[in-house]
Length: 164
Image 1 (spheres, helix red, strand yellow):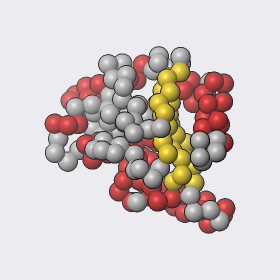
Image 2 (cartoon, helix red, strand yellow):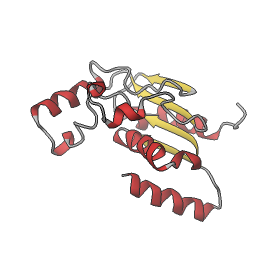
Image 3 (spheres, one colour):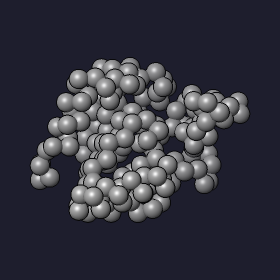
């Protein structure tokens, strides 16, 4: 995912002539973007980052799948998204969640659904400690990006002046 994102952002910057882009990511894409910013220095080219329903701090369901050895289908990234990552010295989420959770030169926001079943027992996982704003909507996983309220919120975050 990081390689594809690197290529896409590079092409977008070239096409627009802009040095920075805004990125909106959902679910596993949130963690992928954070990994790209952390490991490849992508944050240098990100102005705003909106993470929607991302497993920033893991998920209990992923931990259970990883412990059972399930590593295909929708649980393919289970090892990467387990919520007990702090037990492992070199776990990627441990690296991503050291302070600051988002590079300080990136303005970050999170959007989550209060009724998102993927985060049962892990309701605070989508939140980022140094996000400018963490917003909880009364919706589920897909609604956190598809509902009319979510779309309006995302547009308002993208279109607001930088000095706000």
